[in-house]
Length: 300
Image: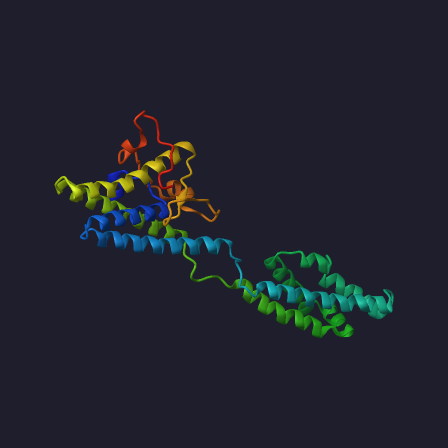
């Protein structure tokens, strides 16, 4: 059984932006009160969460970037031109000599085997589908005896070779993947590590507060803890209203809209499998003097 400080504290899992916003506020409180011995732990957590934000941005960006190499689109256009040129020569031959002439008969047969559904149909295919279709075209040109004879008779071998040459480069471009793309497991691991760091800071603050005399230091420690309480309570209210916990800009505390790229709020609770109960820590922050849930913005 694996125990974590976060599960013992019963905190909700904070989206990275909320956690970073919280940590920046905690640092500011500690700096103002001159409590320097706890700042190193907070600074490490801030640095780690900034790195997690970069990891998340890379992960989100990799989901919307093209899955193939940048030159794939240019090569796709070049391949389309090569296919059109080959079909164009065959069509011109048919038009010039007529369908009943020997060249015309050869052109009709070659077009029916190379482009059974027409070259336009091939141009409407996706990148991968078109590459497979071209491979099929080239295989027929190499293995079908009559087709190979007609291609030589019509003098279009160089056009077929051009299609083959472009398709080799096209296939390589389609096979390129981003080796630096982080996995979703890596993103989740970084988020969990950040949450555990926040929980460790809460434990440190609570331990220090317990031994502190009443005065400036105890007030500062309580205020630092209040930053965590406020965000935990905000998450609780979001979950009560719509189950989707939005993230915030860590510099301003303003809520940020989900960009559809796998944001924290949409996957922490379900994917992590350890969202924390959040019912105990900071529960008092839910109520105003009238006993109703607070509705004003917290930092978020």
